[in-house]
Length: 69
Image (cartoon, rainbow, N blue to C red):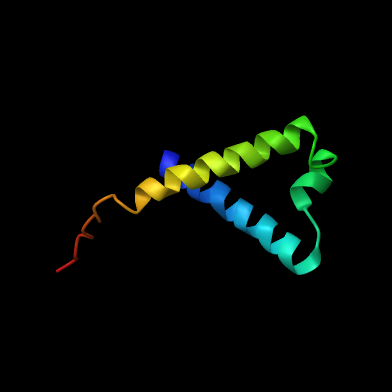
């Protein structure tokens, strides 16, 4: 469950960065009232922690999919 939540937050972060890079628009800052607002800083921190958590996914052994034979 934590893996999925982290992945969702990382996707949100990547979309935010893509928007900044392509359009010079920060949706998180816009929604939260600026980059320095408490809510924006919380969201940025959660996305960063999710990214750090997703690093651990690189080292998890792959689960074998069960085949329907």
